[in-house]
Length: 301
Ligand SMILES: [Zn+2]
Image 1 (cartoon, rainbow, N blue to C red):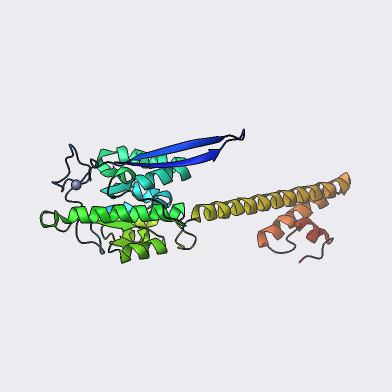
Image 2: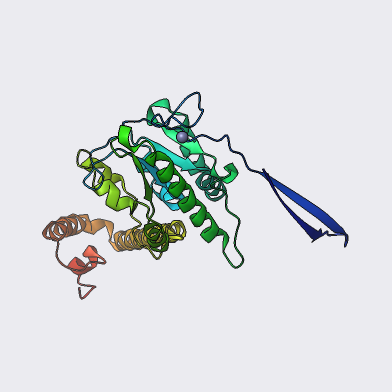
């Protein structure tokens, strides 16, 4: 099956160019599940017995994370405990566009045999490809594509329910709107933090969760985190500069005093230094210059 889109574009030189985009849809893309007896796949990635001890899901299940979950929680996804995950083509493409390092890490996980991560090319599957609707943003279209693919999986796996102890798919998203729409379409959906906290045997995973939990900032949280980090760095730099200035001022002050002392009064200088050390030891007096307190030049704080 072929879907084609034709449009014209104005070139820089003022000419008009006709662009034809062809999108091939196939019916030979398989689910990758060991439990499936319908797909004609030679090898499978997703295990039939996909069990993990969880308060929320007591039955075997495959995880379907959305793009933001992959982008922000890659540390947790890398953990050996997290297995049997379906990475949709939509998610993979979005991750590639938004973060090259995370994309590389995700590809590495997919290549690890023991992790059982399966890439499902939903954008080329006849039943899971969707067109962008008029007025729909690219983000909303991709969220819908993820929901459609998750729905397809849950219906596909339902056929083998009797042999698999109710094997199903769990959509993981921190986007409140997406979660609500998924629930309305009958999908099993959890927030990523909610799911990770439900893993009874692996409480240590909670410590690896990314700090960003705010639903509203969820989409732009990477920008928020970067901004906060920059502010912290700026503050630290300012503090360091201030400390250096104070040290400089203090050492200059001491030098000036030492220069003013006549060589004959060396004993007095030694006595004064001892007094200064005592003052420092008691942690009292003027915070800006201990020597000035002793010499009676500064009124103290
Ligand atoms: Zn199948």
